[in-house]
Image 1 (cartoon, rainbow, N blue to C red):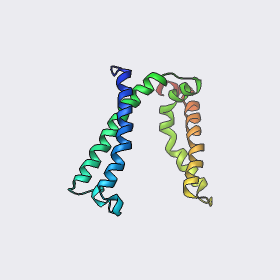
Image 2: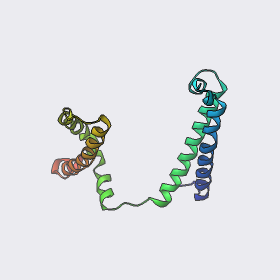
Image 3: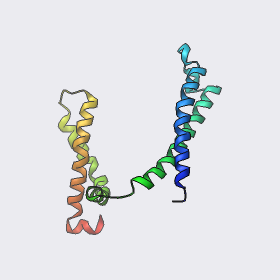
Image 4: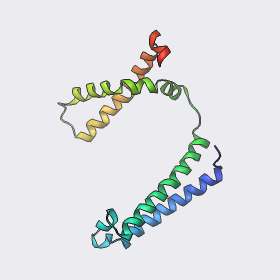
Length: 145
């Protein structure tokens, strides 16, 4: 709450500019044009250090910016998000068996694995929250969850 909105905007600009400038620059200076990017990904090389530092700097800038953006623009709940928030712990508790059962049900489907994952996720997430809210409304579970 103590981060001013102006500081969040500043860090958003800094993070985006740094990402747009530093990553391509490091790629070119680090040997990417000669197809040798091995110095960027490990070892005691200045390229690896520069890449790690710029990556962390951009990450920190984005965290500050996103904290402010979400605080200023997305700090409200509607009926659906309120119900999902209330049932999140119950959904967390029951998600493992739901996901396992869905995976077992879909194991013989002849689909591209990423598509199978996306379809399972589209079913699993709402199902977990719906079951979580249903369980939360049971008399004994109401006191616990």
